[in-house]
Length: 495
Ligand code: FRU
Image 1 (spheres, rainbow, N blue to C red):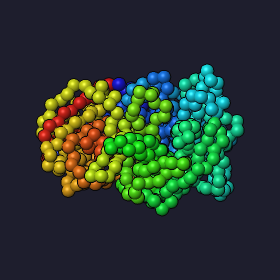
Image 2 (spheres, protein in one colour):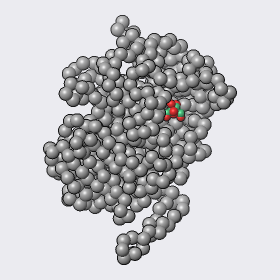
Image 3 (tube, rainbow, N blue to C red):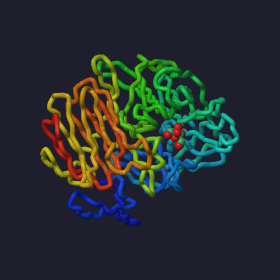
């Protein structure tokens, strides 16, 4: 698989390590590529944050992202671009959208305007339209509040090149400092007409706008003031239709928040309810989190999936604003999470959102290595599939020869990943921590995906998810299944 394996060994850092009482000395080579994931998308170089503008067309999943090519910290935002045929192997393409005199290009979405409602293409060659936020630095520095507005750009060549609409901005600021991250979806109204719906984050709420042509937008309603988690600014929303297990039609509203997440820093909450007449009404005011780990932020879903595709496909930024700019990856910063399939499930009458790893990952499973209480890991790119014994408590430990370890467990209804002694952590005081998540129902099985610098834990195939970065000084060597486990398989993920 896996286009991100790069051969460039730019430099060698030799770490001297004194081991054990016999003072045996090991040399561990680490390189600038040490923490480069093998099957998660990372840009070859530079800074990346939120996934943007994801759409599918003609066999290609497009992934754009907040990108600054000239540094490994956040800066003037572009939209970087990569494509995949299987949601696992990613090919990085040239930068898609550059900042201009109206500002940096912040997060947003893209739609296939098949009927050319925007007039930006032709009926024979309909445009892909990207809708993004312009962030004007001059305005911000001058102390103005209206420095964020929405602009559009279009592509007539499957996302390879983009032209900005000359009438930008299409949605000027309305006096709100944080006014950003448009996610557009075509919605059929009750009278049968189709409209583009924009879901936009506006500081402490979500605003909805409607348009017939992607250029003229009308406000239809807002949601969220005083409801849900408000420990930070609201960002990167997404509005998704689902069928609940009982057949009811439901809408899920994803809202990322920074700070104020359950593990400190940034995280994504969601609401379940109705979307009617251009506004959202939640079924309840319960706070729900999409992923209880510290490192899944600003995730949104793909548009324009083929008609026969019934899945809702999601990807997130696998980092956290708390320390994302100081993690020890010297030539690039950040990876995306695995692509995930979202669906609703019901636990004792409460609806929750499940995130399962996409089924495409199964075809990358190499040889199955049988389970032992203590097994060696074949590589740093592995999936562990673990059947639990029904006792609803478990523990397993990953470790390396340096004594670094990660413990994964469930005890008294709390699922935890403990990375307090899991390798490099000096870059930020909050990184070395134990993270826990409530799971009041029984954990039946676990899927655990390990890569060079991450762990993704899916209990009951995604009824509870925890995504966590890890920077072991040397790759994880063994997995020890200490408690609550009936059966386990280890799959080396093929390259
Ligand atoms: C979320 C975010 C967005 C914004 C982008 C800027 O991580 O702050 O709200 O559009 O990053 O890069």
